[in-house]
Length: 488
Ligand code: NAP
Image 1 (tube, rainbow, N blue to C red):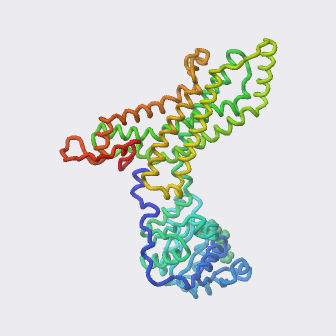
Image 2: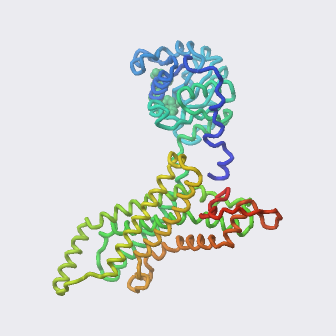
Image 3: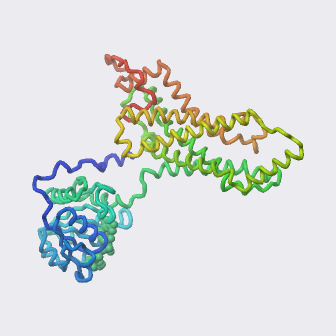
């Protein structure tokens, strides 16, 4: 979340659960204008929650059989007369066709559930536009963040939050009570000026994932090009050998672990940078720069993308022996061996290298799976702070160390073989080691008692240049990951 976003109210913030009045909303009559998908799902949910529902349609006879029998379907004006809370389940462009109902709607609460097709599509929000058309009504914006599907499947199976805003507190409270009886969590987003923001929420596409996805795509592109030059272009230029067949599996499979490994180290690098900044300035009260804040906020998504690439690498690797090219190569080797009358091609060192390489790879993937599972909100919520930090920080760091062993056993002595330097380019794995090794070395330095003690004191509030009587707690395991400060 950027600093700009932090100024806005958080979802879940100012939940209205405690605000409901003692009068139960269930049992009252609720009006719904429109008979489309949203109106139908809303009516079903309202009926299931114990409300009486009256639906206003331009053509009630044709639409009646689409609604539960407990809901009354009638003409718009008739429906509106029977209730004082009306959900307007009609698109914005049709609001003006409701103007004939202005007299019967006067004094009633209108709930605007509409969404737009584009972010900031209109100058004024749909709810403000509705309020301008019906000045004698009180408009409440809400329910638009729920899909028709969520309404039908019930609050257990989807998003539970209903964001509400209105200039009238009483009307907002009434709609909040209705939402609560329906099993949703009303969230007060303030006055009508928030309507635009509420209308933009369903249109946002994975806002927290944009930076991590671009980062992983960028890394993928760089490593893919590098591997392509080494594995396909080099043999063509030097030996006129066509190795294009390697692109779909081999080149992709050497690129994926590079991305997974570097992304995993990028989860832990901002913690190291933050710790260095705290050590340098001798305080934890100095704000991190925006880019570091953003990076810290996106660690979960970066870690999950790392796991995704690692899982794909595992599947690709399992498929390697299935390839036709691999079978031809095996037969070719066997024939060559027979021609050369070689009986034993067993290379002890190679056997051990491969056994260790696969074993540590499997362990690293297992640990990454654990990290991914525990980052799911439902699992994370069931862990206390110590358990969560142990898994995400300590086990996560162990996963990075084991991934480094996996990479080193893959490379073995290739870094010292000059044939591996295609066009003078070093093997890809040597490049991937740079960032993870920096993180590991930094973490090891932070464990040194003199550094650890100083960092621990800073994170307990000590500041350079200020005299504060400070008693160091006896706990020593507190800083195991560099991520215990308030901001990190
Ligand atoms: P829909 O299926 O097209 O239904 C719209 C309804 O508007 C029609 O069934 C129609 O009912 C009524 N209507 C009234 N005056 C109209 C006119 N002049 N021309 C055309 N129709 C008119 O749309 P919807 O999916 O239910 O969406 C309704 C509202 O809910 C929209 O504002 C949408 O943004 C919002 N919403 C929908 C969803 C969703 O998942 N579908 C989610 C969140 C918000 P009668 O013919 O019976 O009058």
